[in-house]
Image (cartoon, rainbow, N blue to C red; front, side, top):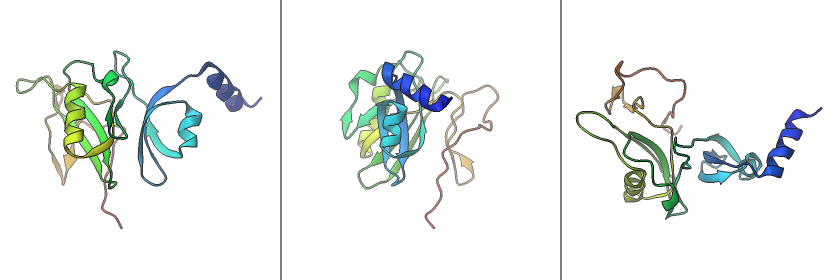
Length: 161
């Protein structure tokens, strides 16, 4: 049997959707709650799905509109990605839960993204172990007891060729 086709049919029938943050082949950031088929129909080539522990979706800003239903979640460390109208990509890592800071709310993250011109932005699975590394140096304070550590996923930004 064609298990993939069967799974897609069942998922479509029950309307199963997940929060998605991803880029299409034209390097446009898409955020929203969608089915796998909807993500593929939008041409997403690279994407992640993340839902907070309290069930909130990852969408912060869609087409310039703040997604207020997704802005709960308390004060925590945060990691987010956004995109401006000119195609510039914004990466954000905010420290949290240390002697120096409590972290940020989802509203704080949305406000920062808007301040820098994001028209689409999504919350990622940021936490105490999120690191931002730039020009050979860590630019944030990792809040895990073991300090910065290698992770199996990353966003890598390289100059255009």
